[in-house]
Length: 167
Image (cartoon, rainbow, N blue to C red; front, side, top):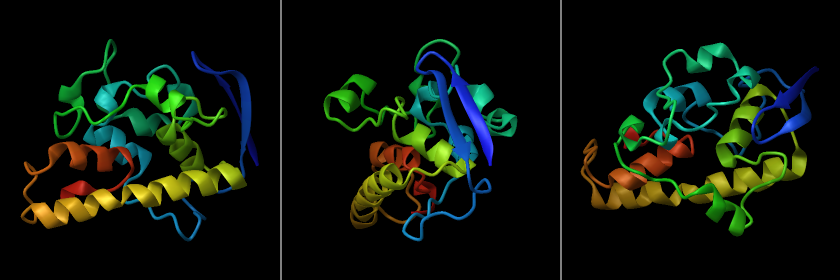
């Protein structure tokens, strides 16, 4: 069991433990198609995610990541569209868990690394499963492989670790 201490602009002195091996022993209902590294390399969140907390995660995740050093840049997103809501809206809707103030992707990164929080893991996996509904819309309204069809939904699916490039 490895202890991680976080000191970044969102959290100071936050600690958690890695109790599983990285990328292993996921809940049976949680089968993400993309790793955090895959997502960062494809281009998500306008390049403005994890910028000030890279020390918490493996350096290899950032080798080919599309990151912005200044402001969100939707041109860094794979589909070149904005598919994100501001963090303020996530907070207002109660979607943010206090241990993961950056939202779902931060939870996923920490879960992928091996952190487990039983109740929060169940909540986030339920949210992840619910997001799958967007795959149905793409399959219904788009020709297979037409990456220009429903680009915003496809980008949003990338944000939730679904490989929308294969639909």
